[in-house]
Length: 277
Image 1 (tube, rainbow, N blue to C red):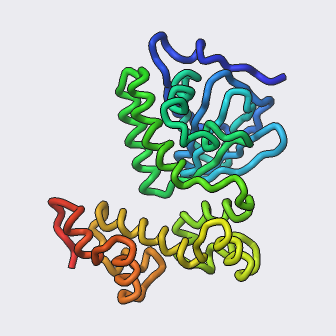
Image 2 (image 1 turned 90 degrees about the vertical axis):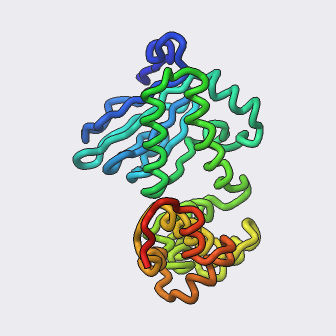
């Protein structure tokens, strides 16, 4: 029998959102639970087995899942120190966002399919955790809920794919945002797709208007830009971390993407930090 959780039992009077941190036991859950609220959770540490009515999937650190009311599920730790951060969100808060920002419809909470899963890299996860700390110290009212949800939803909606894109391609493109994949360039994306390179290239041109190299290099340059403004690593180290040890090629790609050389970008956007040479 599925357990039903109600927001009236979880949210304090006058609040719209509640954050909970939980270390998961490795034992398989006896049953799934359902809820009348929207739920957002992410894997903070370790690995998690996510049980759904039809199947189960393994989630890694940085994976974020959006669930609607009526989507039953359960969580199980994989190994030691499996930690998740979970948000219970009042239905009116989520519906209000969609009413004012119709571009979110069809994405995340507002998707018509299975629970939506995204991945945050180490820096994006750090930003998400920073926002979570701010939320915990807030009144958890409508303003606090929107201050947390809106930036995240706007960013992830912009990263979403059209409904007609093949599932294998959308999954490969999402996986390509991981350093373990994009460091290997277009070959990493093609490998994770599990298809022949010409087929992947044709489908990416059709659905995204980009080649695999174009797509991966855009992700690499986004990663490089974040690193240049948040780390003190030498530019050559950042280039190598992107999978581009050839500095001439790295500079060419970065200037094309951002309009500055890497050093100019760092000097313009990283303030009051001693710059490495």
